[in-house]
Length: 431
Length: 190
Ligand code: HEM
Ligand code: FES
Image (cartoon, rainbow over the protein chains, first blue to last red):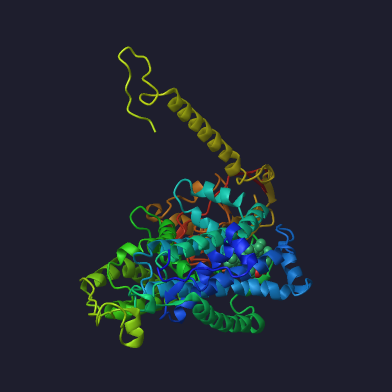
């Protein structure tokens, strides 16, 4: 782990020496996020988002645990207990708004984090495991957020639970029994609400565990960087502390300003008004949509309105939706270009831009009603999404001629690198 | 773990380290036993999630339909799920019978979906077979979709006057539950 020039922890006081011999926790911290962890010197602000995601998770856990002290997971009173948090509990409104908007900001941060990875190809060797674990975290987050949204037991909670568990009903033969088993009944009711609460409490801690593995895997090769050229010498790196603790701290300040602006001035902007109506199993809201962060996937789900051979439309939609995420697990092996950073890949850069636009479009369509022209656009958007990963990426990694890479990180920053290897011929990637 | 199986000519066990030893047998037996035991423990852990007795014990529902005029429908609840009971007009029955059954996604005639002699009473679950929303069209003033039956607003499934799927993502017709007429005006569902 880490580079040979990494500084070693030296306990100074008697107390820290005593501790170091018995439980070297300060040593672990020093080597992981302290002065003992050398990091590329050229990281830009896109590298802040991992830390921001961690902060978002902590905020969710803190606000969530507090709300769980006032919330009652029973279909008869869940809605009322949420309103009790909003109206009666001291500062309850703030905690609940912080939790609901915290989920949104968590997803914003994680989406930027993922697209950072896509642009700078952070998923490539030797960082595949970091990417795969990240996707596991993403799946856990989605499950957590979905179940959390059910808890207030409003109209969108109820119908969201019904539609999403209905996805399992699409599986041939065993689908319906699975759906009944998941819900513990024939429609969402007390049994479903209770188990969702139990799991909503559990999964964030599972997520925290996977995050530890994610960071462990990261600390083996260390962070990538905007050039995508690996660290070669000490002059390519700076210690995490104080350089990146400061930079991350600044980013965190900006993040908190944005978060508080929404939390205090537009707390319901990202939510849906129908969720302030108590759940009613007999009437579906006119326009049911999941939370905004699921919209791109929801658009893919709804794009399939036609049967294909013997596969019914319903199953196709469900398969496509799951495939759109599972596909990302194969990305390290689909993109074969040896160059990591999109900055040096002129062709890739263009298609990356189109992909971002496509996902934003799908996001918009997922929130739109199931009518034309939205359905047709969702079909085109979904087709492009899959084409990007399965056709376009493999082709451009073959035909593209990348720009020359700098010899080292130091050279890209200072214009020259006087460490070791004379002059440094420009490294040409193998074609 | 298991070394080369070599037995002595006379069939007696080879010296300790070769051959199938008693210990191998004990290992396999112990691990199998623990495996079966562990798997058995999963049964209660998994089935506790299935509907509990009180959920399953919901008795069948009886509904008085005397007030439902032709062209009207009512919504009731059965097993916590919405039910539609619709009194079809002759025109709606005609419309349903005119359709070429072979052209349907889920081919069924109106007669197959109703009770004999009671073809005007269409009793279905009010649960879209796509992802489970409640379709519109049962209550007064709700849109009935392009085929005059039900319309599911969630992802745009259209059902006809026999509640058969005609357009949109739903794979099958609205489900017809088991039911019977206790008298001319009382229906027992379930
Ligand atoms: C991965 C981290 C988490 C995410 C993404 C998340 C997401 C959500 C969401 C979207 C809601 C619905 C908000 C609303 O519309 O009112 C919610 C509700 C809730 N969550 Fe979480 N949550 C997380 C962690 C936790 C934790 C650790 C707890 C601790 C028990 C918790 C407890 C609750 C409670 C009690 C509610 C119901 C009150 C309410 O609806 O506001 N959450 N969560
Ligand atoms: S649930 Fe009815 S169309 Fe999707």
